[in-house]
Length: 89
Image 1: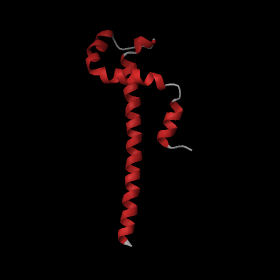
Image 2 (image 1 turned 45 degrees about the vertical axis):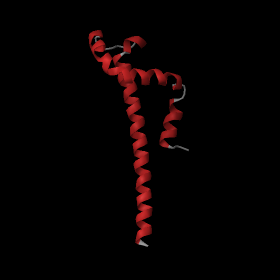
Image 3 (image 1 turned 180 degrees about the horizontal axis):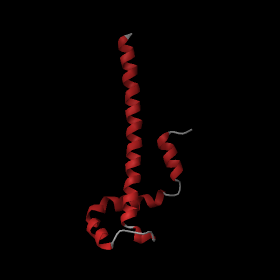
Image 4 (image 1 turned 60 degrees about the vertical axis):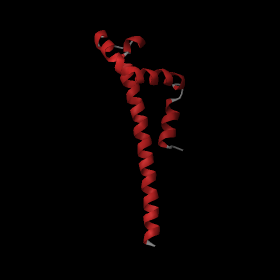
């Protein structure tokens, strides 16, 4: 009986950890997008930091730029992406 309880509890914890990790990964993706948009905001007409600061950060932003450009094709339905991550309905 105790072994069965431990097995159920272990599976339950794995599920919670998996869901928590998925939510954190999704939040990290959104933070990367926000960082890229803030530092390269002049390209989209938003207020941006001084250009010399953006140029100094550019070598470190290669991954963020790739993420931002790859996400441009899937920006049509952000709510659907969040609802699928958070498992609504």
